[in-house]
Image 1 (tube, rainbow, N blue to C red):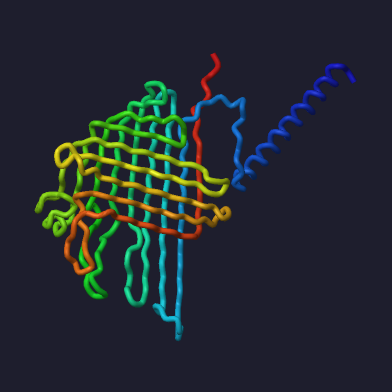
Image 2 (cartoon, helix red, strand yellow; image 1 turned 120 degrees about the horizontal axis):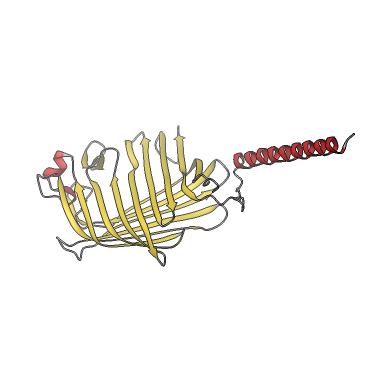
Length: 328
C-alpha cells in the first residue's frame, strides 16, 4: 500500500470519528434541553445575543364536594385560575428593548354564592433604552393595564353592584426618562415627564365619575412624574421572587397624592410540571373610592389582593443570536 493511500485512509477515519463525536454531542445536548438541564454556551461561540424570550404558564384547579358533612360547608366548590407571564428582551450593542406581558384570570363557584371572579388582570410593559454610560439608559416606557370582564361588589346573595369592566378602567402610560440597570436583576426608571390616560369605557361607570374621570366623560389626561423599580432574585435553586413598584404623581391635580401600584410574585418549583405561586398586589389611588358592604361609597383605601395556588406549570425560553459576520 502506497504512502498516499495510507494517508487517505487515515484522513477518512479521522473525519468520520469527528463527525460521529459531533453527532453524539448534539444528541446529548438535545436530551439535556428536553430534560430541562442548563446548557452552557460554547466559549468559542462569539455571536451576539439579540433576543431572549420565554415565560411561565400556570393552571390551578381545586374542587370539593360535601354530603351530610357534620362540620358544615357548601355542598360543592370549584375554583379555576390561570396565569400567563411572558417576556421578550432585546439587546444589541447600546440598544435594549424589554417587553413583559402578564395575563391572569380566575373564577370560583360555590352552591351558596354562585360564580364569582377571583382574579382578573392584564398588564403590558414595553421599555426601549439607549446606553449612555455607567449603567444608565435614556429610555421610553409604555404601560397598559386593564382587565378582561366585569367586576362587582356583592351586596348580598341576590344583589350586586358593577364596579369595573374591560377598559373601565384602562390605564395608558407613556414616559420618557432615565433607566438605571446595574445588573440583570434590578432596574430603576425615573421620569420627570410622563403622560397618563385613564379610560372609563362603560357608560354607567363614567356617569358617576368612577376612577377619577369627570362625570359623564370617558377619559382623563394626566401629566406628571413617574418612577418604577423592578427586582428579581433566586431565593434558592427552586424558588424565585419578582417584584415591581410603580409611583406616579399628577402635576395637574393634587401632586402630593401619589398613586401606588405594587406587585409581588413568589414562585416555588416542586418538580418539572408542578409549582406553587404566591401573588400579592397592592394599589392605592386617591381617585378610586371604596365601596362598603351596603353599597355606599367611601373614601380611598389601600387595595390588597393575595392569591396562592398550586398546580400545573410550564416554563419556556428561547434565545436568538445574530448570524456570524462573513469572513473578510
